[in-house]
Figure (tube, rainbow, N blue to C red):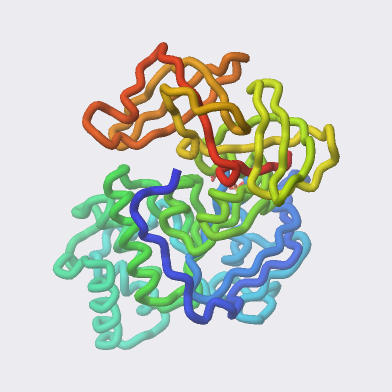
Length: 377
Ligand code: ATP
């Protein structure tokens, strides 16, 4: 479910200029595809997340952009230039690794200024740029410390300052917040978004954490088995997932297998035997009568009521099987009369906890046609 915190990066003004163009890229290891025919355009100033489960090819795609792997087929252009023969160090790109890879014997300032020193930047210019970078990541005053004298979050910010100090066009981040605990992770998400919009550098971030991707990104590319299966703004991916996989990966969803009946006045009508109900979806579905279609409804879009809500589509009845109290909301599992179990989430509007419904109570469950979405396999 999306985070309450609206940290999301603003859609950049010059959002139409492509920075990265990936065209039909594939990469296999020992004959096994890790990245499979990916085409993708990332625009200037975006905070783009590659999101997917373990082993789906996110890191490999990031490493291909950085030049640490070579594609078997396809092209990668950065700022219009084909990167085929450009080694990592000559690309206008910086990569921040999961481990941060700070030099333990160097101070914060030396770590941040290391790349500038390598490039032969003068000492006075280096001092100025390091100070600027440390101010950006709010580490002023810690420049003489060594990495072991810092907290995990501070080390993460040193690594970020070091990545930004050379002002790359593009920063690649591999699970940048993985080492932080939950609270610090949430704060740092906000901070990364602030810094990204301040410096205006395009960020491409790998994460397996859907809340993180939802909170931070301008757009998300969802990956499955080496392919990008959906690209969109967080709201689009959450509200209009294209497939069961995406719907299930981003947040929780109730799935109903239903037979298509007809499209009628801009809506689709279906019948779901497992729920014992007629279902209605707020837009037409391209299907023939009798086709089985999977319909998804997010838990927070289900309404629970003790009173009968009357006959009609998207109305079912059942018994509350269990309640999970999560503080801000409660999650109810309702066993419908035909055995199917649905999940409903309700905000806890008062201190009694949610709708005040208890295990064993009989409830009616309903939702609006616009809450439902048809999903492909
Ligand atoms: P995770 O979230 O677990 O890091 P990921 O989505 O980043 O996963 P990748 O690291 O891109 O996944 O790996 C994709 C597939 O390619 C995996 O099956 C992995 O085992 C394989 N792979 C990646 N790098 C290599 C390599 N250097 N040699 C052999 N196989 C590799």
